[in-house]
Length: 420
Image 1 (cartoon, rainbow, N blue to C red):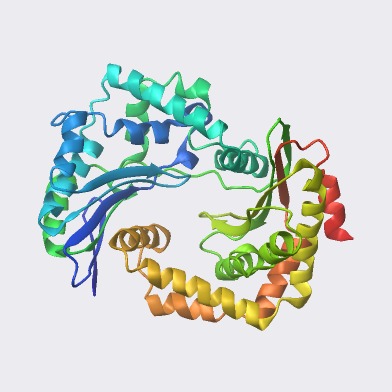
Image 2 (cartoon, one colour):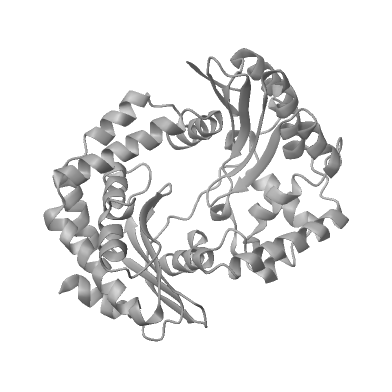
């Protein structure tokens, strides 16, 4: 496989990886502008902008955007996260130039038609309503807000209805002007791609762009706290979040291996103890999420209101126990799962293109796969136990409860259990 990089004179970055044997390619542009880059009165605009990109340009209307890719059997989509907005496509190799042209068109030439803004506003408000009706989705927004109060990291990606209801054409254009500069964009492609040809196309399409002033992110501060909302639901939804490393931190792989061993699969401690042995829930898991300067290890479960207190106590007890008796076999299993997930994911051109963009965003280079694997292999049982001790005893914590939670634990009760 051939991995190549290039940077245009205006800062626009290109990374490609040719994958022999494929007849298709995944290609996209990852923009370093997400919910975290919004001012308080802009909350939700990055996601709104992602929707509006498909609603018409100076060259194509909304239907023509969709048809241009689907007429050749391709796929076009986008997503917004807290730190990135991505626009991407998967097409056959001969249609890569078309895909890049369409993506460039929606990024550089959106018209933000007033009628289309109103139509899409309605769509997004429905999306917000759907999220609010999905307890195991909305609880993570509340957990994030509790962990990072009064900070962009704590705001929802979709935004509140009152903000979304008020965004104007000028608001959209202002956000683009602030955050859609060439140095904030990464063109990433994997599969049957020609690097030199993509560089020439990128130069033609994006080389004229003028860099934007650097945007200084407000440093993230995990505060933590307690959120609960009582509602008549079938299940009580329980989420704990603990401050953990950002993706540039030395112990990021320790955090991910810990989360996997604690609640990453059917053999994990929480799954075995809470679900298999005690039957307290159907779903329980742990995961370690990371951002530029912060991260959160999250534990989620759904159970009955009557069993919520017991589930919380057992969860804390399992976290404490991991600090003293996490075994080499468990750590080895978690390492194997992490490496397998990484390597299996690289069999997909879409996953590979996204990984390349993410690595360029983080490091401005592509670490060798062997370097990543060696860092995973370097994590020891002692490392995981030390990290488990921190999670169980001293890491700042956020608690979110939703559903029939009147009898659920308080944050003080969780803290007392951690220290008992």
